[in-house]
Image: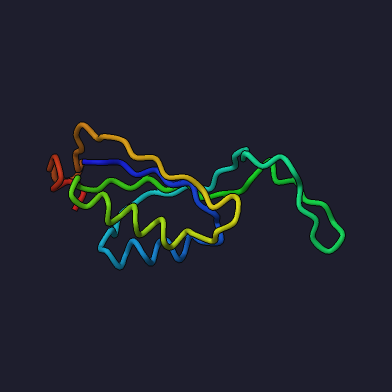
Length: 112
C-alpha cells in the first residue's frame, strides 16, 4: 500500500475531491494548513501588496493499493493544476500495514 500526501490550493479542493471520487477513492483525510513557499516576492492586486510567504493550503492524506497509485496521483495532478506558482506538492510513501478498528480487518481490505 502507498500513502499519498498532497498539499494543494484550497480553491482546488472540490475539483480534487470530485476527481478522487470519480476514480472511486471515497475515503481520505484532509486538513487546512499554512506553509511557507519558495516564492519570496509578494503580489500586488488592485494596488494592495499581498505576502506570499505564508500560504493557506489544504493537506490531503490518501492510502491506496500499490497498483492504484499512479491512477490516484494522476487524478490529483490533473485536478489541482493551474500552471501557476503555488500549485502544491505530492509525496508518496510506503504503508507497512493498516487496520480497520471496527471490523479488525487488516491490509488492503481495511481501506476499501
